[in-house]
Length: 479
Image (cartoon, rainbow, N blue to C red):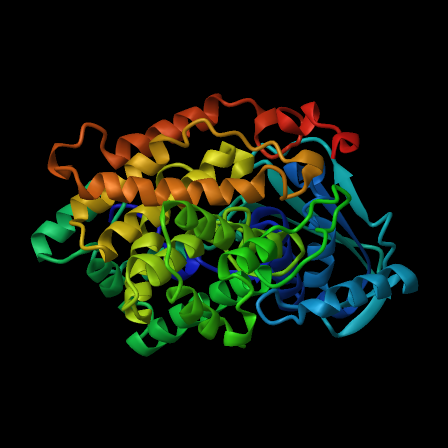
């Protein structure tokens, strides 16, 4: 059987806590997996001390991405989807002050926050984002396990223990897709649009009610993150003293009409009543994107799309479609949007990367823009060929985009880049809709391959290490 990785829309869009899917959500999940390993091996009750070793990009920008905090929360048995985010500081302060952590939410062990998380600057060969857990047992023996956070909250081990399971799952997929060309061939043969093909694959993993409720939960989280960001003022944490802007933008655009709504959905309906011209469209889309990433930067709950650092692009374009492009749009349109976006994202993950530590920001904002562009094109009535063309256009104009976060924080230039990615996505969709996509000169598969080539040629200082670009040209004193 041809080897094709099984990637669901729920793999590409995961609910989690900011600021980074690879540096926060990934290490959190790695800690949870290590706890599971310890339980399976019967070691959990015999662990005396533990140390967490962060390698490469996880080390270089780990403080700014809250990697240490996330890894500890995972070891303490908390889950990023369900944890009350207001308790994060309380839990971390308790670990710091008491010098111990609640391992697997089952027993307390000694733990020094400042000494037992070790930032190793060298890179492991398998992937730039390596994390190794070392536990010492009561009998003096040690146990060790290494994980790699490969972007978008995905966590693997070097031996890819989950590969066999993924291949087993794949056998039940009615449509096997490894490239944009294969996707379009399925559409032609079955006379279906892309979202219909993707839905059939999803139905081989879960029933339609589970798909519907799962996507509904994702959209609800996206809408809430936009709502929270648009109604929270102040300064973002981390030391750069970045002022939140989304709340002011929302207030000005609504002309202070806060008395008309009390919930995220009512807020959406209120925006629909506003007359918008080109300038206001730019402002609203930017406001939506910035709001999500301000929430992300403050350890809020967002959805990877495909990563936390690029989590504002997709919901901004979805919101644009709901409140500006089509006032009659319902959740059914959004479900269609997410199915297409998830498949486009999976093509980039299979053919290149969605990790900034591997490919720079083109792998995050570039991919998110491509996902949004393709999805918007389908819900606006575009053909499968136009969907792929829109995705190609969006990525083509992100090629080579570097990842150089100032102070290792997912703030500058990351927050604004989501707004730019969203605007480019809308523009790409409009261009594709006006084009004969059957005569496109640049296939999506070729742009994906080019992105991967560019990623390999890019020096490490532009791959989420904060060792080049804006990260060194702009000093903390400038901020």
